[in-house]
Image (cartoon, rainbow, N blue to C red; front, side, top):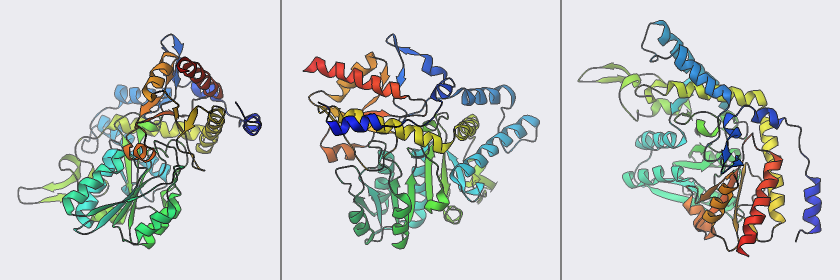
Length: 421
C-alpha cells in the first residue's frame, strides 16, 4: 500500500524540459522489438547504445580515411593520424586534462587500471607498502591491485561501506593512517549508483601521502568530469559506456607520474629507437601505446563526446536524475521490493530485489516484456557479500530512457510479482 507521504512525493516529481524523443530518434536500435514487445533498454551501466553520429563517424572513417597512424607520409595516413590525435584532444577537453600528453588510449577502464597497477606498481609499490581500495569496487579495480600486492609483497586494505551504500568516511580516514602508496576508488558504483565525494577523498589521500586512481567508468556517461578540480593522479573511463564503441577508453595520468613510469607493453609506436643492445622509448603518451591502436574506436569516441556535448552534460545529468528519482519513488510504493543502495547521492542505477523471487527469474520475465535489465553480482561480488545476496536486478539509465519506460517497468514488475503470490 502506498503511504500518503510517498504518494505526495510521487505527485511532486518535476520533470525537467528535455526532448527525449529527439534524442531517442538518434538511436536506431531503439526501434527493435524483443519477444514482439518494444525494446526498453535499461542496461546502460553494462554498455550504452550507440547514436547514428557515432555509427556514421566510424563508417566514414573506414570509407575515406583508414590507414595506420603516425608512421606514414601518404595522405590516408595523415588523415587517420589527424582523426586519431583529434580524438585525443577531445578526450583531453572532456576530462579537462592539462595536456594531450596526459591522455593514453586503452581498450577500456579495465585495461587502464591494469596499466597503472603494472607500470606504476613496478615503479612505486615495494614490499611492505599497502594499496587501499573500497568495498564497493568493480572487480576491475580490485583484482589488478591484488595481483600487484601478491607480486610485490604489499598489502591490500579495504575501506568498508555503510549499509546504505555510502563509503564509511571515518573508516576510510582511519585506513589512510596506514600510509597507502595508492588509493584506488570508484567515482560511481556500478552496482549501487553511489556517487563518491572524490574530490574530498582525494584531498585526504594526498594529505596522507598517497597517489589516487579513480575509476570513472560509471561517472563519465552521467556528469561532467574535471580531473584538475578533483586533483587525482589517474582517472580512467571506458568509451562503450559513453555511447562510443567497445574496445576504446582512456587513461588520464598526471604527466610527471607518467614520465616516471616504465612502459607496460613493448613494440610499435612506443619506441623511438631500437637496437639489440638498447631501446629508447617514445615520448608521452605514445610510450604507453604499443602496436596499431584502435583508430576507428577513437574516432567513434570523439563522435560520442560530441554527441554528449551537443545535448549538454548537465542536461544529461538532470534528465537521468529525474528518472532515478521517479524510479526510486515507484520502488518505495511497493513493500515487496527492496532497493539495494540508498545513498544520498546516486547516478543512473536502481539496484533491487523482489521478495521471494530469484533475480534471474525476474530478469528473464522482464525480457519477455521487452525490458533489458542486468541481474547477478554486476562484477562486484564484495558488494553482494556485504548485503548477503547472490545478486540484484539492476535497471541502469541512459540519456534515451523515458519516464513512461520507468512506469512500464514497474507495471511489468507488478504483473510478474503477482504470479508468485
